[in-house]
Image (cartoon, rainbow, N blue to C red; front, top):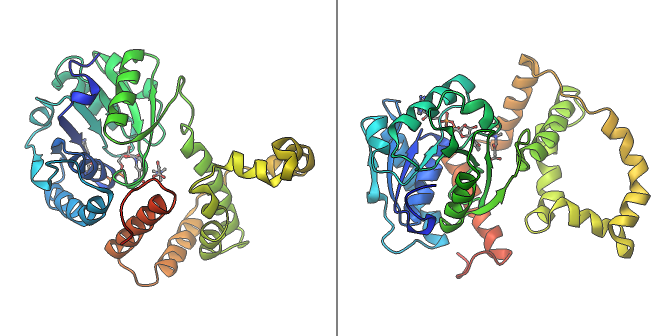
Length: 318
Ligand SMILES: NC(=O)C1=CN([C@@H]2O[C@H](COP(=O)(O)OP(=O)(O)OC[C@H]3O[C@@H](n4cnc5c(N)ncnc54)[C@H](O)[C@@H]3O)[C@@H](O)[C@H]2O)C=CC1
Ligand SMILES: C[N+](C)(C)CC(=O)CC(=O)[O-]
């Protein structure tokens, strides 16, 4: 597929440099890549450099690759220049299907032949995004988690017109770039992790809409409850333990029948103005005066502490 074997890639292009594109830039810089970014917003470069500066202390704690430096970031004046030398392209433009379709077609036309182009989309199937591209075989989904410079997971999937070799190349590249990869052999709505998160999110919105729980109750229920276990043991094995020595078999036989009732009532709530405002107000109260930058620093340190505590990071505690 790509002219460069995944572990030999040195030059990466990041298209769209907001929350996620900027997070990818920080990740690739920390891993020692030369990164070229492009974003049409007039203030994009300032914002991007601020994001990288804010992320760098966390990245130093994780351990930088030899030669890694924010100075290896170049802001390209045009999309064509951004991808002209790229050995891999990560697209992180807004989640709008038409925009992604056009942009991926433009990227396909401008990127050297065979170079894999991945989209950060959090839900569109590649089949729907690759329709306008002349060589759709190299287009894949590479779905990250916020912030991409700290959360290891990337979900990789192709569309109907993607070459399997492009999916395999992307998975190998992300591994070489220090990510933890799940490769899907088919297109799933919401991939795997977002499909799970969306089920939880739908129920959270129901509870806020019905006045059954506050935004704070919902966050506390996860951070003081299941979230503590999920950092190192997934929901399947966690629930196998709920069956005691009888394991998952006993858990399903015991609790399965009572789980049927909540399953049958799950439907998406109407995300109307009142619900939107209730969630926004609740999040403002939960932030309790902390700025966005303070919350990002707190989250970054929290993720690093969890990675270290669960043996996924070497080195002394802060
Ligand atoms: N925010 C999140 O937690 C996550 C988002 N994603 C995905 O990442 C992608 C980007 O989302 P965010 O970074 O959150 O959005 P964002 O709004 O923070 O950033 C989008 C950036 O794209 C730029 N942009 C606008 N038009 C563009 C174009 N035609 N070409 C290139 N760039 C353009 C904007 O100027 C902006 O800087 C979306 O596909 C989203 O679904 C994936 C995982 C998590
Ligand atoms: C909110 N979101 C759906 C865009 C989130 C993601 O796609 C992944 C994440 O970071 O949780």
